[in-house]
Image 1 (cartoon, one colour):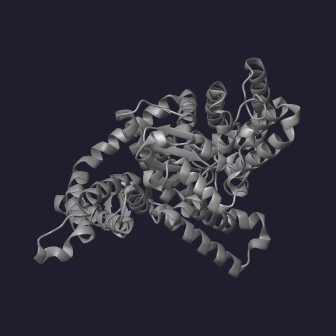
Image 2 (cartoon, rainbow, N blue to C red):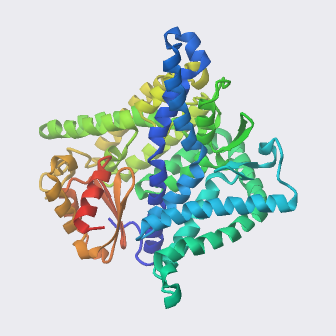
Image 3 (cartoon, rainbow, N blue to C red):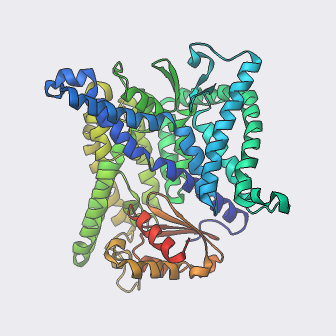
Length: 526
C-alpha cells in the first residue's frame, strides 16, 4: 500500500522508520528492568511489609533489594542505552564499532561538560538538582538525560556512516576504517560537550516551557496526545512521538531523593524505588495510563464486534484469529494484530479508535490513574505497576471500572459502523476475492524455512534487500526497487499488513517478529 508519493517523501519515511526502529533496541531492555524494579520495589516497600507480614523475612527482603537495585540501575542510565541503541540501530554495517564509539562519545561529552563547569566556576558542590546538574556514569555534569544520549547516538551514526571506510596513508593504515570511527567520534564529542554546556541550560528552559504549555491545555491536551499517538501507530512513528514525554523534561520533572529526574517514565520508576512515595507522579495519568483502558478492554470489544458481524460460515476461523489477537492485546498491550485487521479495509474505524484512545487518556487524567508501564498497557504491567503498588498510590481500580463500559462502547460503535457501511472486516470479505485476511495463515503456523523463503521472495529477492531490522511487531526493510514488493507473497508468509513508501517497507507480523528477523539474517548472511 502506497502511503506517500515517491521521492522526497519516500526518503524521509525511510529515514524516519530507521530512526524509530533504532529506539526499539534500548526500549527492549525496559520490560525486564521494569519487572525487576516493580517486584523488588513493591515487595520491599515498608508499607507492603506492614500490610503483608509474611514478607518480613531477611533473606527474602535481600532478594527483593537486589532485584530493585538491578532494575533501578537501568532506568538511571537510559542516556547511554539510547546513545548505543540509536548508533547501532541506524548504522548500516559494522554495528559493534558504532555502539562502542557511542559509549565512548557519551563519556567524553560528559567529561567535557564537567571540565567547562569547573572552568566557569559553576560546578555545584551540593544540591545538584536545583541547578540542573547530576551524576552520569560517575561524572558530575549537566542533566541532559536521554536527549544527551540521543544527540550522541545521532552524531555517532553520522560520523560512522561517513568515516567507517576511510583509508589513511600507509604509515597510519592501522587507524583507518573502523578504528578511525572511535577516534573521530571522541574528538567530535569534545565539541558536542562544549555546545551542550552553552545551549543546554537555555534549551532546558524551552523544554520546561513546552511542558507548561502541555500542562496548560489540561484534559484537552491529554486527549490530543492520545489521538496523535494512536494515529502515528500505522506508520511506525509513534516511538518518536511518545519517548520525549516518557524520558525527557517534556514529560515533567521532579526532585526525588535529592536528584532531578526528568520524563514521566523515569519519574515513575524513581518513585517506584522510593519508600516515601505516597502518590505517583500525575504525568503518568496523562502519558501512560490511558493505554490500559484501550488495550485491555476497548479493543476486545472491537474483536467481539468483528466476530458477531462475520459471515456464519467464517465465524469459526475468524473467532480463532480474533481470540489470539485479543489475548495478545489484553496480556501484553500489543495491538497491531487487531488494528491491522481493520485499518486498511475500514480506515474510518481506525480514526474512531484513535479518538476513543485519546478519550481514554483524558479519562485516565481526570481520574488521576497513575499506573506506569515499561512497554505497553497490558495486564502484566497493570499487575506489577498498579495492583501490587496499591490503589492508594495508583487508583488502578478505575481501570476496570472505566474499561468495562469502554468494551461496550467499542463493541456497539464498531458493530453499528461495520453493518451500516458494510465494511469488509474479518469474515465479511466477498467470496470471489482471491486473497482475504481470513485465508492468511498465522506466521507461527508456517515452517521457518518456507516462511523465510516467502518473505525474501515477497521483498523482491535477496539482491533487492538493502537493510533489515524490526521493532516490537513489524519488520522494517529498505529495498532497492519498491516495485518488486509482492504483498500477496508476504501475506502468504503470515503477515497481517504491509506498509510501503517507495523503498521503505514495514511488514507486520506481531510479537514473534524478532525470531523472523533472526531467521532472515541467517539466510541473508547479514
